[in-house]
Length: 157
Image 1 (spheres, one colour):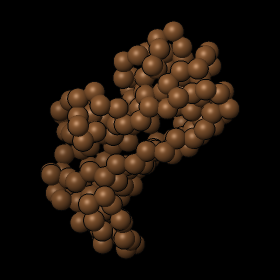
Image 2: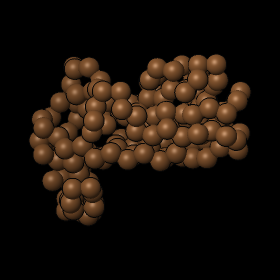
Image 3: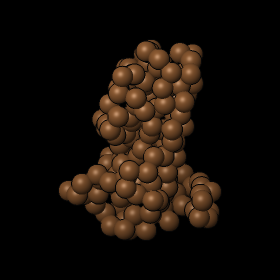
Image 4: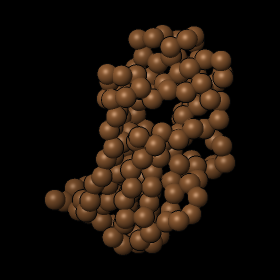
């Protein structure tokens, strides 16, 4: 199937080579103030060649709190081959991707997107991370019975 993908740095006219996904309807929450892996939403993909585009998306869920108003922080970490997972934020380090104020238990869905250019054919592992702004309060990326999905796909460059 041929598709056209419009990204931050241009248009990619290539075919969809592969797609993997992870989905959870479990509660995904934390009161930890340090970035904590959401392993239930880890997606792995092994690129077929260098230079292809890998598109990672995370959508859905029910972002909320269950104790008091708090902010949910999110990151995307990528592990290349046997290396260590690193923050995919352009500034790196501990720079957050998003920080969402949770002022209601009604909650809302989440949406994150990242385009990665392959430099080799080592397996890539994409994992979202979350943290609470206050260790006394629990907040979540998803509260059951809602569904959150992470997807990673390779597009021919």
